[in-house]
Image (tube, rainbow over all chains, first blue to last red; front, side, top):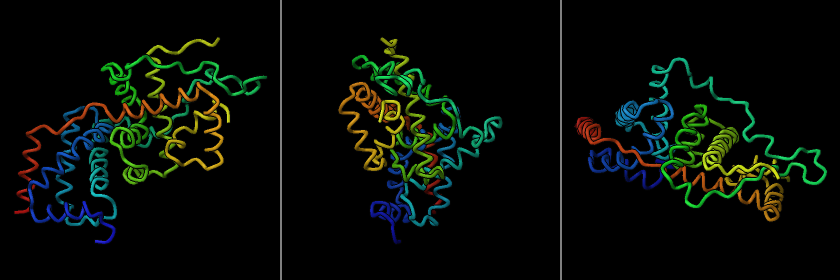
Length: 211
Length: 75
C-alpha cells in the first residue's frame, strides 16, 4: 500500500489476520483520545462511551477498505466524528453543528490595550497580564476551569482545541478530521485558547487595574 | 508590531506559520516587552495543561464486548 506508514502497515497486517492482542492494544491506545473527541458532540460520559464503542464497530466493518491515505489513528478519529455528530444530532436538535461555527465577540477585552491614538504607547497593554501564582495551574480547580471553559465553547472551536491541544493532533490531522482549512482551523484554535487562558486568569484573580 | 497585534498572532507564531518578516517583528517586540513575554508564557502553559487533563478510558465491559466483536469479525 503506497503511502502507508510502516507502523500502521504492521498493525493492519496483524488486525487483518485476526490478532486479538493487536486489536486490544489499539483499543487501549486510541480510546482515551476517542472519548475526548466524542465528548465534543455528546454531553454525557455514558453516551461518549457508546459513541466510541459504535465507532470501533464501524472501524472493524471498514478495516478491509482502509487504504492508508491518512494515518490509521486519523482515520479512526474521523469515524468518531461521524458517529458522534450523528448521535449529537439526535440528542440535541436545537444545536446543529453548523449553527455555532462563528462567534463575533472580541476575544480579548479591548480595554486591556491602550488606544491607537495614545501618544506614547499606542496598542500596548493598559492592563498587563500579571504572573500566575506558583502551581495554580496544577490544581484540580484549574483543571475544572479549563473543562468548563472548553465545554462552553462553540462546537467547532471545541472540536479544534480538543484535537489540537487535548489529543495532540497535528494541524493537518485536525483539518482532515474536521474538514477545515489550515487557516480556518488556526483562527478557531486561537479563539478557543485565548478564552481558556482568560478564564484561568479570571479564576486566579490576577487581573490588576491599570496604573 | 504592538501588544494588541502580537496577541492576535500568537497561535500562528507557535505553529510556525507566520511569514518570516512578521516573525522577526514578533521576536523583536517580545525581546522588549515583559508583558507580552508573560502573556506568551501563559498561553504556552495553558496549552500544556490542556494536554494533561485527566485521561478517560473505556470501561472493562464495553472493551470486552469489542474484543468479542473482533473475534466474530474474523471468524
